[in-house]
Image 1 (cartoon, rainbow, N blue to C red):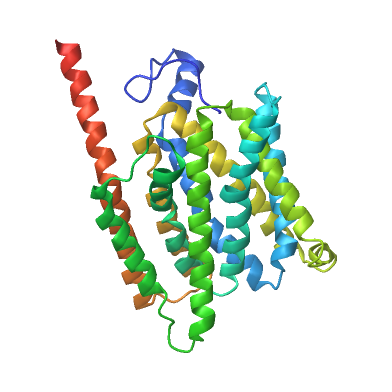
Image 2 (image 1 turned 45 degrees about the horizontal axis):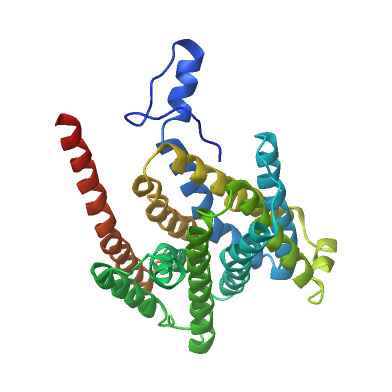
Length: 333
C-alpha cells in the first residue's frame, strides 16, 4: 500500500545519489516497517488492558477506536491517490473480512482483557497465524493443511491449555472465560486472514481495505448504543481518552500500514517476523508497565506457543529456500 513501484534488489534496491539515495535506503529497508508494525501491534495488549483498568467500558472504547483507525487508513489511501470505488462484490467481500478479521476479534479481545493480564493475552494473540494456516484449508481453494505443521499447532494449543490454569487466588471459571474469549478472538482473526487470502486475488486491495474498515467501524459504533457506550465519553479522563486515540491510530492503523509496506519490499517470510516480535513485546510491556507477575503459566505457555509458531512456519521457510536455490541454479545455468 505504501510501497514503491521500482523493483527491489538485495533488500535495498539501487540507491540514487544524495538525498534521494538516503531516502531510498530508508524506504527500501524492510526492517524499518517490520519493527514499526511489531512495536505498534505489540503495544496493543498493554494499552487495551490499561484503558480497562481505568474503568472505561469496552463499549466506550469500540466506536472511537475503530472510527480513528478507519479514518486514518482511508485518508492515507486517498492521499496516495488510490482508486477507492468499489462494486457490490468487493463491498460484500470486504464486509466479510471486516466482521471476522476486525469486529469480532476487537470485541472478544477487549472483553478478554477485562479478565486476564495483557502478558497472557499477548501470547494467545500470537496464535493468529496458526489459526489462519489451519482455516485456509477450508476457506481458500487449492490450499491444504500440511501434516508437517501439526506438531507446531499441537504445541501452541498445549501452551494455551497451560495458561488456562488459573493462578492462585484467581477464580477458575472467570480465568477460563478470559482465555476462551481471547482464543475465540484469535480464531476469528485467523478466519479473517483466510478470507483475506481468498478475496485478495479477486478484488483490488484499496476498496477491499476500505470496505472492511468501514464495516467494522459501523458495526462497533452501532453496537455501543444499547450498552450506553457513548455516555462514557462524559466521564472519561484525559488519560483514558488519549489511550483510546492511541489504540485507534497506532495498533489499528499504523501497524497495518507498516505491515503492508513491509510486504511490498520484502519476502512474506521476513514480513511475518512481526508475528514473533509482537508477542514478546506485548509480554514485556505487560510486565514492565503494568507490573504484571511473571508466573509459571506465562513462561511455560509462552515457550510452548513460540515453539509451535516456529515449527509450524518451518515448511514455508524450507520451501522458500528451495525456490531461492532453484532460481539461483537457473541463473547460473
